[in-house]
Length: 125
Image 1 (cartoon, one colour):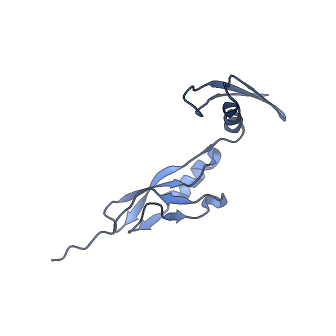
Image 2: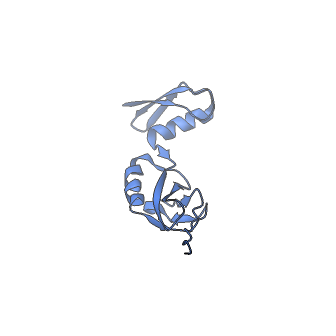
Image 3: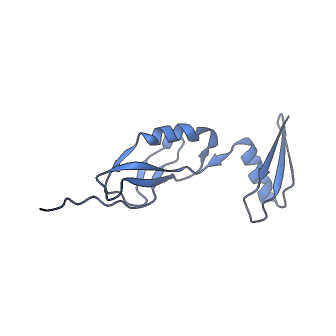
């Protein structure tokens, strides 16, 4: 048996929900609505997160650009995804919304730039 405490973030109430998992049986207590129950079950059995980070940019007016996944990825794969993204080097120009990685880790989720980085202009002498 495994018992997990989840604070629901579906609405502002913030219910403290307990999920009890016993084999294939799942029991949920403390939710004020069905959406909270669904959220708690998902969080207890397969937690997922949107991943946001920054990567280096070459030749840009900024040294880094913020990026994020287009959908949630399993929480247990966040470190692996971060290691893969840490090796990424982008070249300016980059537009907000540009896909910088397709199908991250084969999960069917892309990674997009969340801001624009202009190409650094050479100074004429």
